[in-house]
Length: 477
Image (cartoon, rainbow, N blue to C red; front, side, top):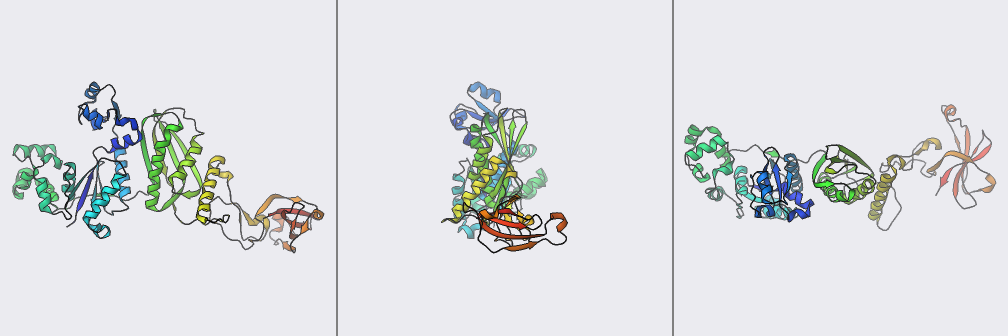
C-alpha cells in the first residue's frame, strides 16, 4: 500500500513576507481577503492582540493602531507552493500540489533511496528547516487522510503507517476537516454525524441512499480504496516569478534583498534543470501598475545567483526609479545546457578559478559597455586574410581553423610601412586570390612574412605587387 505525506502551510504568504520585512515580527501583521475584507493570515503579534482568522479588517484596526495589513494574493501563494515543490523535487519524485497551501508527497516509492519511510520523513523535516516556514505534516495511506491529519496537526510517528492507526487518529476529528459541500455537511450534522469516526461507522449503502454517492466516493478516497485525482508537479519549462514588496521602494538599496531572493530561486531552478542562461528580464511594477522592464545580457552563461547579483547591481545602480516600486518579476526564457567551458584562456595554476574569473570579467564588461561592443577573435578556414577573421559573441564555441598559426588580430585597413624599419623572422608565403574572387577583393598576388619592428613587436607584412608597396596586415603575439 502506498504511503503519503501531506505538508500544510497555513501562513505561507505571511512567512515569506516576514522574511523580507524584519520589523514585521514585532508589529501586528495580517493578510486579508480583498473580496471579503476579512483576515486570512496573522502573525503572533496580531494573535496576541485577540485577532483571529475570519475577523473583519475593520475590527482588527480597532484593536491596534499599529496594524500592518497586506492584501492576500492567491496566485502568489501558488507560486510559493511550486517553489517548495521544486526545492523538494531533488529528493522526491512524486509531488502533487493541493491548491495553494499544501503539497502531497508519495514516500513509499522512495524508501529504498532513503532507507525507509522514517528516513524519508526526517529528510523532509531537514529540508524544510532551512526555509523558515510554518508547516504541519500528516502521514496516511491515502492522500485525503494525510491532508486531514496535517490540518489537524496530527503526525503519526510510526515507521510504517497502516489504516488502523490512521482510522484511530481520524476518529475524534470534526467532519469539517473533510471540506465537504456546505449542504452535505449540514445534513450530516442533522443526522448526528459530527465526527469522522461516526461517518466511517455508517454502512456504505445507507450513506449512498441518504446522501448520494459523492459522499460514498469521498469515504472510499479517505480509506484509500479509491484513487484521488492529483496535480503532479513538474519543473516549468521557463522560469517566471513575481514578488510583492512589503512596502514601497524608491531606490536600488531597497531592492537588493528581494532581487537577491528571486535570483536564489533562479539558481535553484537552474540547478534542478541543469541549465545555464545568458539573459534575464527584470520587471519593476509601480503603484500605477506600470512596468519598467530591464533586460540583462550575459557574455557567458551561468547559474550562480552571486554572478547575477553583481551584474544586476552594476545595471540597476544607473537606473532612476521615477515612481515607487511595489512588485518585482523575474523571467528567464532562454535556457542552455550546462557544459564545461570550452573557451581558450590564459593558463593558470587553477584552471577552474581562471575560467570563473574570465566569465565574470566578460559579463561585467558586457553589462557596462553593452552587448554589441564585446566580441571574441577567431580564425576560420578561409585562405584569404580578409575572409579568415571572425568576431563571434563571447561564449560562442570556437572552431580551430587550418591557418591557426596566422595572427588573429587583423587591422581594419592595411597600413603602409617602410620595410627598412622591419626585420624578417619567417620565410615569405605567397597568397593569390582565386579567379572568381579577383573582382571582389581586387587582389592578385601577395607575399606575406612575419617581421619585428624597432620595439620588438611582431607584425604580419605583405608586399602588394599591384600597388608595388609593403603593408601591415595585422599583429602577432
